[in-house]
Amino acid sequence: MTADPYEAIDALGAAPLWRYYGNLFPPEPVTAAVPFLWRYDALRPYMLHFAEALSLQEAERRVLMLVNPGLKEPPATVDNLYAGIQIILPGETAQAHRHSANAFRFIIEGEGAYTTVNGERVHMHPGDFLLTPGWHWHDHSHEGQGPMMWLDGLDYPLVNKMEAAFFELLGERLQTPTVPDDQSQRLFIHGRLTPRWLHRIGAASPIGNYPWAETEKAFEAIGDSVPGSPVDGIVLEYTNPWTGGPVMPTMSCRISRLRPGFSGQPFRHTASTIFHVVRGHGITRVNGVDLHWGPHDVFAVPGWSVYRHENLATDEDAVLFHYSDEPAQQALGLYRVDDRPFR
Ligand code: GTQ
Image 1 (cartoon, rainbow, N blue to C red):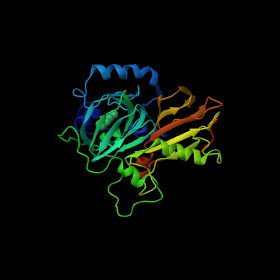
Image 2 (spheres, rainbow, N blue to C red; image 1 turned 60 degrees about the vertical axis):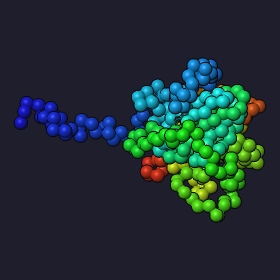
Image 3 (cartoon, rainbow, N blue to C red; image 1 turned 120 degrees about the vertical axis):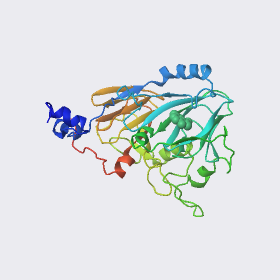
Image 4 (cartoon, rainbow, N blue to C red; image 1 turned 135 degrees about the horizontal axis):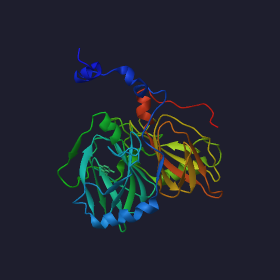
């Protein structure tokens, strides 16, 4: 035996569990992520700046990543998920690629752009929710007038931690369409009438675009006839028509209408969530930190943080788009909610 048995076992690739135990088996989830808000009004001028300064020949995608101050390396927005804001100008194209990470876009502003996903051109309008499931080819084109901006959501932090990340360029800048434009939306969006000559392929929803017009119709149909969730208001999940479950295996994507004056109950669960303000003004208190939000802001609610939403307007709805890693946690048997009352 050498002088220091701890040094000796270290050299042998061993470590004393008793010195690590509390860190490896914390009584409750521990995260480096912090509650944080990204202000759209503040970022927008920089989006426009980089749109002029950097061509899409120089950048695979022109995106500002929304990096949680507690998760800088590798950059992530919450532990398993990422958000970014992408800009594309009229006449530009972003080249075709695919990756094992699942992705979606929630359209913020602009008209006239489309993304081509596995041969289908999917046109974008503000409030639309578009899917690019893992390993689907995708390229973006803009044939409209002004700048087009959207929120990107991806699960690459999770996929990379799972050591399952692949990436590939198509080789051609753009895909050649193989089906009529926006076909999947026409085939599947009705939700209760599913085409039976088609077969389920893969784990994701076959719908390329869940258009804003349909989302609004759903909110209008529900109206004020029900109280909804005391935590999340009138909260609707975008679903996979084959399963009724989440649109992609790792991410649950939802939209909430908070009525005028809505004052939510505090709640927490193990899933980490990213919110995007579609419209309205409010405050979300996250573990005692007040995040004041307005249109198009993005904010992070780390897992197991107590959060509580408030719509500050007494005469206007607030609408929040949100996504979390709940399906991944559910699939692994790890998802939990805290049903104790909070004070
Ligand atoms: O548009 O394909 O924000 O591949 C990050 C990675 C967007 C995209 C992102 C991507 C994309």
